Length: 165
Image (cartoon, rainbow, N blue to C red; front, side, top):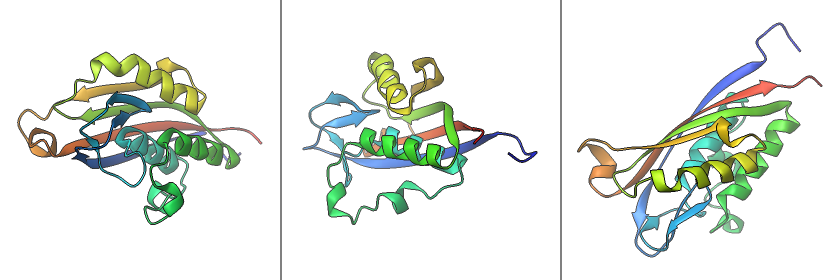
């Protein structure tokens, strides 16, 4: 390992429009059966932002390049399965996830009732503790995509650590 710090931080962002005939899935948890998000996969906007934050921290390609929306094999795929692939890729390159923090920007649904379940599912997939995963719902105070009822956005930050080989 070089003299450089063994830690790196990455940021991720994703946004999806609402779709009336799809389930809403955030962090691998099904929040409701209708009025979900539009996307090639299961449209789990939270997991997508976290994957990009992890990949960015490790200096790897983003999810659009790894999992293109033009790939028919990825249609409707479970994003937690993609997160598992991302974590294995990080480990292949000598990185381990340390923690993630994400802000889910939406006026509805309320995130608080699902927070513990979301944290547990994401943590299990990444192989870290639930206390190393933070998610929170934030409203836009009358501004933007969420307030117009068009969709959900997520900002995520991830810390990864270089492991000795």
